[in-house]
Length: 65
Image (tube, rainbow, N blue to C red; front, side, top):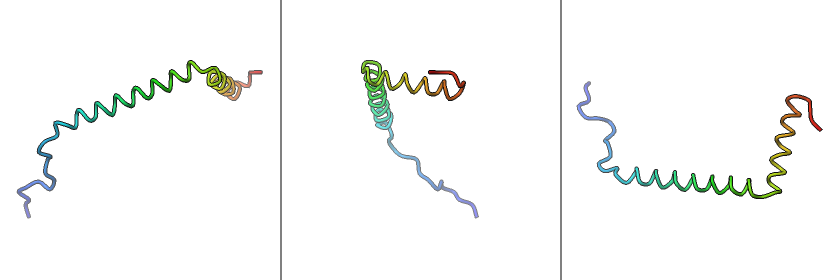
């Protein structure tokens, strides 16, 4: 038995998809930048990040205070 037509039809108009994907990507990028800005400007988060880095170094190498 031969199928003469495809099982899935391609969408007729997908011009808006590219714009929507750019919009989602832009929102994600701005959100990520905002989180990084918060981390690098908040002293409490800087201390937390530094303590995590020191804990990882101590865990891997055995050195640390």
